[in-house]
Length: 189
Image: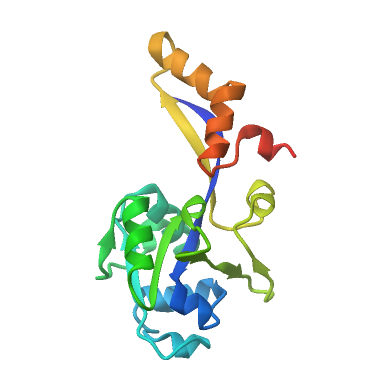
């Protein structure tokens, strides 16, 4: 299999408007682990509103969940088995969080609209907060960033080569950027 990099993305921890308005703007890895493991179940324990945390977990095995679990535990295989309501595609996750009080989930950062769902910063061990911005994603400062790939069975040929050449073209890369991801050119700025 031959991977071809086409861009960069980040997984954001997103919250509902009431949580954001209640003052929650970032989480540390330790805080997120405690939420994931159900050791923290109310936003007031994190300085937010007195509201139950409604955590919607991405389905294990999805790329978004893999990035999240690897960040939390160093390896997705080390993530404990937990029972949280699951969400699949990005649109479903965004809609569940937007429509639920006290909600939190993992989501591709490009889907956090800042109106109905809000991307939290990640608080590092040094106390500094890193936001899922283009600059931090491109610099790999944001800890939940990931490369986007197209995988071919050996060197691409035929229609696979046509598709990959298009995605790598100026027009294709504009589409990558238009859909909220960093294009290869964005990564070189």
